[in-house]
Image 1: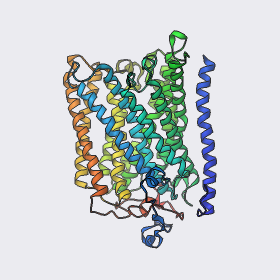
Image 2: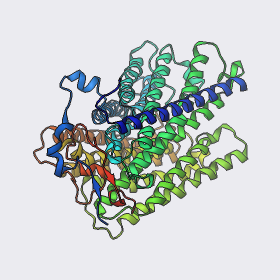
Image 3: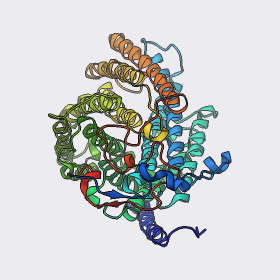
Image 4: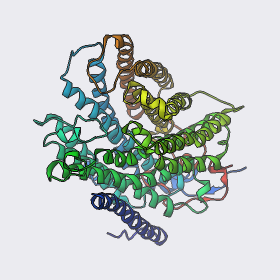
Length: 43
Length: 543
């Protein structure tokens, strides 16, 4: 959903925040996969 | 230095900008579907208080059973379920959500943002939690009972939990997802939503400590998720990650768990450091001593928290070199922690101090948390730890860190910002009574446990040798009194929110500084719609 009343500057900040969140989410998923993966390989 | 900030939401101009106070009118719209950081912060705080009461009730069961030797009230297995659930609820349901609640309320206001960066994800982060904890608590009513192997969930014992174990693991996964989403939101907010001029080294210490805490959470919650997933497959799908009979290694679980578990301690305590760093300057009427060193000390503590995990498991039989490394690395943490304690003392030194309730709790934190820190230093000594391990000395140590540490800081934060949140002043007289009763009884509760541990009383047992009877009775009396005192806290908060007739000013405290104090008390539903301009350090602690 897009808030039409949201100022452009704020919308740009939120768009940038979504990118930050995606990067952090990928990092979290990668850490999970690394630990489980290394346990499987180590076994 | 003069304060130079301009924005339309400050109290002087607020009447002309009442457009910021449009709240949803329906109950569901206001609370279930809310995307407002203040409402979500309130939800987190109310949830956390509820969990404190439930976890506290479990602590009362534990202390009642331990009041005297012998089995009096509960079966041993139920006792173990109580110790396990008490810890899981206090760590994941009470302390962590309370800090996220304060972060939701304060981070946007402190950095001059209109809301969190990702408000819908913020709503989701919160509303996962009640389901997670309902699921976790429901295991107590299942045939197989709740988890009883301690919050560390060590195999092979935890694998003896019945079918309810699947619910426990799913609940932990949901808590982890909630924490990770909350952390991502906080980092995205701080990195992207700061007001013009709010440079990183102008941010309040509470924002700094939460930024670092959020990174810790993103780094370690997936590790816990991985560990419990492997427990789940060991239990239900015949894998043998941690099952020695199938070639697995239970010690590997301990390594993985504590790689999560030690940073988790700092996740609970770093925001407390931030709160104390806000409160002490206000009531000392001085800037925070050594702002930059406080930031770097926080980051150093966070870094070191990743390389000390094995001090929790010295007795498993590590190589001597490993034990020495973890011993010295652990002791190293006392350096940045000492920087913080000395900076807090230096902040108060020659300040024009007054002792309102938040200040009392903050000073109580500094003194009593330091006791927990010093007993931690004793536990870090490998040779000595062989004696202390799994005794009540460890219980005393981490309760000093978490109760007069993290919980006192939460109390301090509540008294400090509650007038801002509600627009009303709490009763200073009852606040002080609450502090002194808490400060006395928390020591009656936990200090004797040092002696019990040194005398050899093991933890997680419902019965004990008669030689431990006296100190256990004193500890239990302290526990009941401390628990009752917190009912007083609930009354004070309720009275402040709904009955107090004393209105709070925007600044609330004489020495308060920071963007949140430029807003009305309570602030408008939508604040900082137009970002303020921060043009000097006067609104931060960085001068």
